[in-house]
Length: 115
Image (tube, rainbow, N blue to C red):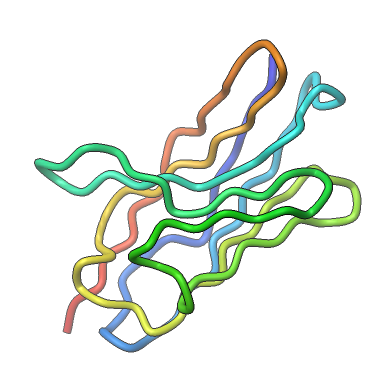
C-alpha cells in the first residue's frame, strides 16, 4: 500500500502562483511514476502533469508552459509549481502514484482561482 498526502492548495487571484506538494509513504519502492490530476465541478478528471522516477515529464495541454512538475531526490515527494493561474484552473487536485501493479490516489486539495 502507498499513502499519499497532498498540501499547498488554497485561494489565489488570477495570475498568481501556488505550489502543491505530495508525499508518498508506505511501500514506495515500486513507484515508477507520480502525477497530478484535477477535477472541476461537473467535469471529468483530467491529467495535469506526471513525472517518472527517471525524470520524464508529461503535461496536459491546458497547463503547458504554466505548470512545472518536479520530484525530490528520494523520489518520495512530487511538486507542482503553478504559475499564471486562471479561473479555469479551479479544481480539486489529486496526487496519484503509479506502480507496475496498482495506482494510488490522495484525498485531494482544493485550488480556487478567483478575484
